[in-house]
Length: 189
Ligand SMILES: C[S@@+](CC[C@H](N)C(=O)[O-])C[C@H]1O[C@@H](n2cnc3c(N)ncnc32)[C@H](O)[C@@H]1O
Image (cartoon, rainbow, N blue to C red):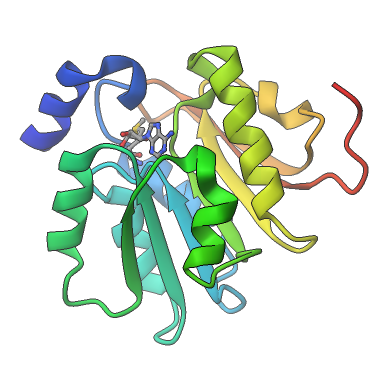
């Protein structure tokens, strides 16, 4: 684990969520949910120090884009420095609650994939609902939302339909990886 991750967990345990970054097993499992031959625009929410981003960039086409949206200014600065030489990457220091507006400004509406490491299932319900509504708003009919979470509760959320899921035991804590699509007719709250 990087010292940066440890410092940011101590500074903001609720926002960072887990005490260590994703394991190599979880990173591999998550990237298997992405069809890189079709991925033109990938958005990552809560990339932290960039462990999933590095894996995505390994397989991402040369002319595709990876947009990293990170709320923590220390992580955002670290990502900017780390990926400064890769023209596919844009680092945005922003809150993902404003996702739809942020993507429109960056000409990335309805991305192919939104990969999220934000610890949605362990945060306050009101904030989780705001984030999930924003993610659904930013998606088109063929966008896919891939997220790794401590519980499966998002899999039957009214905004989304579950495409597939996997359980990754080799991570601290064990997490569920889910692929979701935007529900064509979300149920009333
Ligand atoms: C569990 S860590 C995941 C870090 C990394 N993706 C990994 O797998 O190791 C959660 C990350 O989400 C970020 N985050 C939390 N809330 C956010 C928000 N509303 N918008 C953007 N990033 C957020 C945190 O700063 C942190 O980097």
